[in-house]
Image (spheres, rainbow, N blue to C red):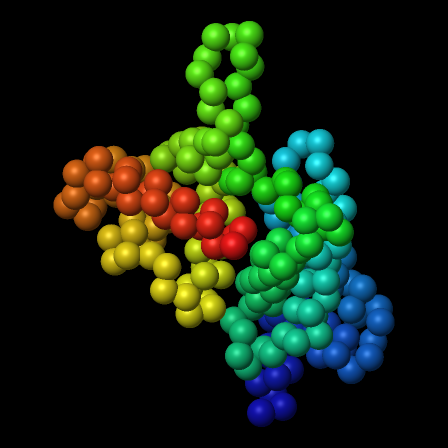
Length: 214
């Protein structure tokens, strides 16, 4: 058993660092947080829009990363990086869902999926103030990587918490969408019409929106 642990620590140094951090080694903890802080900033860019104070989401992400360092179990979790990303995501989403509108205003106003689309009256366009960015997301993942990341994160969070939100078709479409397939490719893979896939994808986005904010 000792030999196996030694091999694991050599091949995966984060395992050794996590063990040392959990034993009280502050330097090991700092090293892991520094090495994986990029995950936090990646999430911050996705969940916050330009002009918002991103420090709140960064702080929540760092809390999630610290939790990952202190709770990581090499026997239960495949890799520290994967586990850390999930902990960061869960912490951010939990904070957004529970945030008070006044105390944590940036968390409640900056998620791109929920922000209404404003229309310039001088342009002569019709009013679209009730339409959110979640309604207008492209069905091509390559066109909206941040939005896709949010959908993927929140959908995983929903399913991981055992909530039954999506229909069978929505689940299938969502699974294919998060693999990077376009709506046309998904329709072909599932043997469905493009219209039914587009409708299922839009319903899924709205449900992700609603879950995040209600």
